[in-house]
Image 1 (spheres, rainbow, N blue to C red):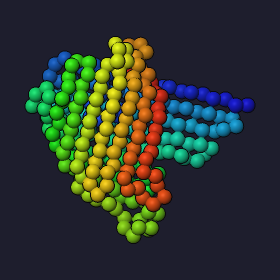
Image 2 (image 1 turned 120 degrees about the horizontal axis):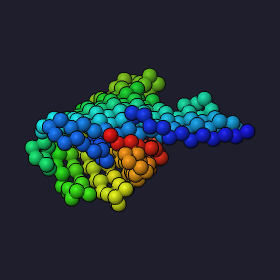
Image 3 (image 1 turned 60 degrees about the vertical axis):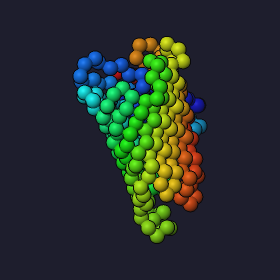
Image 4 (image 1 turned 30 degrees about the vertical axis):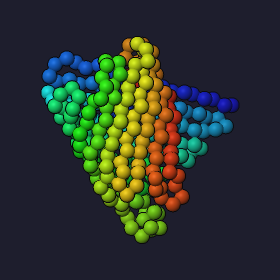
Length: 247
């Protein structure tokens, strides 16, 4: 007998740098908002598979300061074999001079054993500018220097003869968001770090409101590494359909 159960439960789990779109803010000097997103699939019977995608994003404003905190987790298993596993944590602080210009500093930590690295740490600082803000459409760009450290797993370290990579990088972000209608929003986010190699992440998403603060989100994530380790591919893609709650 073949049973398939699709679960879309909301828990505190979401990330989105550099901004948390769709969240409403409390008026005043101290503002707080966030997004929680979760999607899960469980299949039993002739095929045993499970997957979990969780994201949590928080945004806190204190005068000219805007602080963002993000967490993300992805886990997939097929017949007791783990086929995907990724964990991410990041934080960013922005100091705004006005509505369009700001300085930023961020750091993030990522674990993805399927890349051949135990973990990756990146930190960057620089200048950000909002080129478009019509109320329904925004376009932000960030650029600045950064530092990246990657720790190889034991297999790759033995194969290559060294245990880590470290380099100075040029860090850039482009974030475009627009309201398609009163109940739907499109977003394109690109984050890139260029040093000894190019590492980039693109997320294209469409969010449609269901009721109140609850929405359905469809997203395609593409990760690119210009110089992957031996036996690894340069491009990873991820397609998600999740429920999202803004608060």
